[in-house]
Image 1 (cartoon, one colour):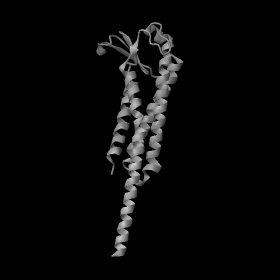
Image 2 (cartoon, one colour):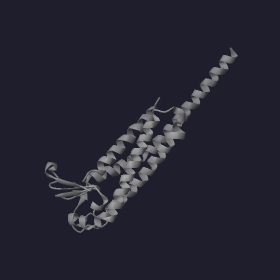
Image 3 (spheres, rainbow, N blue to C red):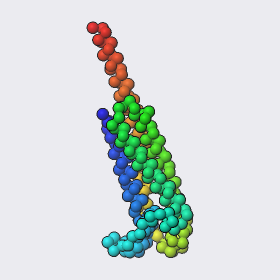
Image 4 (tube, one colour):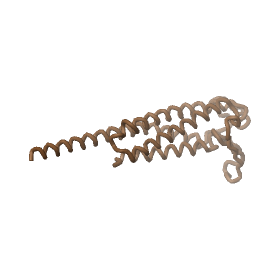
Length: 202
């Protein structure tokens, strides 16, 4: 039976991976009055009128306009894949016997989530380097690496940052869940031994 902490671990793992994926597909990472761009999408038109915007998705790495942008896109996508894979491992734990939690699923899930957080943080730190590209300078007026010029941070970038910050708690919750499962298994074994001893006494 899944504990409350285990249920929280499963729910948060899936929710955070979905939110990170949604933010990666957002164009609102850097924006000005008429244009916004994210890791994989660029939109033109009035920001206040989403229906009147024209959006273009970068479907291949060749379409992404800068080398550092390409590298950060690969890293961020890899971080999202790792976070999603960790969520699947956590979900699979709910359908296997409790004794296999630490050895087969829970520990690898925690390690996967730790790696996902580290990789995604690195990608988020690298993405603003692409502001020195010709593409970004045309939109943000003489922007430089880590200086957005006339552009401002959008909700997509902020959402990705908040998601990664919350994802840092996933391995901690997973560790607490492992300790809780160990305690339950130990109690179960002790109870069985006590019952066996009582049967021998009578």
